Amino acid sequence: MLIFQRYSWWVAAMIGLALFLALVGQVGALGPFQGLFLNVTSPVEKVLNGTFRPIAGLLSNAGEIGSVRDENNRLRIENEDLRNQVTELQQNAAQIKDLQDALNLTQGDKSLQYLAGNIVHRDASPFTDVVTIDRGKGDGVQVGMVVLSTKGTLLGKVTKVTGTNAFVRLITDTQSRVTAEVLGTGADGSVRGTPGRGLSFDLAQGEIAVGDTLISAGLGGSYPRGLPIGRVSAVSGTNQDLYKKVTIEPGVRISTAETVLVLTSFIPETLDLAP
Amino acid sequence: MKGIAAVLLVTFAAICQVTVAPLFPISAAVPEFVLLSLAVVTAFGNPRRGMVCVPVAAIAYGFLSDRAPGLLLLAYLPLLPLSLYLEQATVPLNHFARTMLAVLITGGWARTLLVLGTVVGGATAPVGSVIGQVLIPGLFLDFALLAIVYVPLRLVGWSGQGMSLQRGTYYSSL
Image (cartoon, rainbow over all chains, first blue to last red; front, side, top):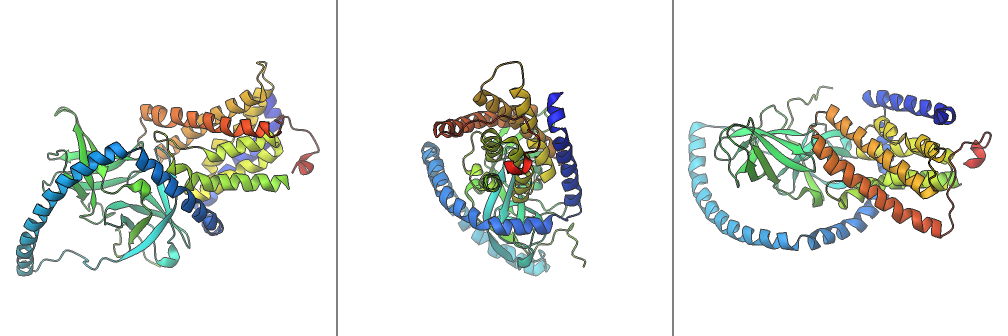
């Protein structure tokens, strides 16, 4: 083969380099170089983000005028419904507080602490959805910490940290799994990312319907309980199916999120803080 | 000097890949700026510059996206040998067709390899989704972007280079 006669040494060298990079990456030796590289390139990223984000937002909105109008109508109705629910919940809250005091219940750490960070770039393909934020080890961010939207919706989890940056695997990444339950009904299962940066729900037990709200179940210790994830937008399948196909609409438009909150006060059970 | 410019170009393309590309998805696929820049460097520069730029691009993109640089290196690896193979194939193809074919095949290989990487990491990747959401839109984007970039470069007078390696010209080519 002529191509191997001409390029054989280069192809061999590149395969060797790929193996070398895989090995040093496994032991974490690339971390400092990665941190340095991210620092050097961050000014360029800021300029590109500042330039292209508004354009993308404009194009996105222009292409969605019809759906935004429908969504607006739906939200108006939903808003009225929610106002009524809030009134009811406020009445219930006082009653629950009295009961909690009476039973001396504790719900874990109530003093949640957050650290705000900006998304500096995003690696999005149909099967991966990872963002980089401008907070790192120096700010106290650690692998495993949970990341939320500014409204408190679950976004993902920190998978890697450099000195000044952290990589966050979003829940829409196909490698993400979050144990979740349906608010109110107790049905539970697992939320996972689907190809195309969507969300689906594998229902383990219980009943589910369009419009139901999903929250994190807190099982497994990776995520705290009670974080909003999204709403059920479609349910398909029959009773004979092992799992019904449940599509989830995320509670936040992840593609246009710019600021996130790192939940620094929640320590996942898998996180080893021993020196 | 041109070598340094080529390295800066692929590094800039890697930055664009994680900042600009995700903002303009088609279906769920995003443009492959890194592969496009490597194709431009090899097609209009010379193969030796491409040989330097492939690992640089893989490492830069890996650092920025937290993907494995080694996997990215393997993903972009076929571009150069494939370009030479197409140049010396018995089927007569002009420079644009050779470049396009090399980019499309490498793009398909790269995306498939990266999907396999995510599957190894625990993701589920139905074949239908891989073809419908990754390969077909991705190849369409590669085709469109290369055509958009290639034609103006030829119009301003850049000429396509051959892929054959000449002995003793490595440092002068940088």
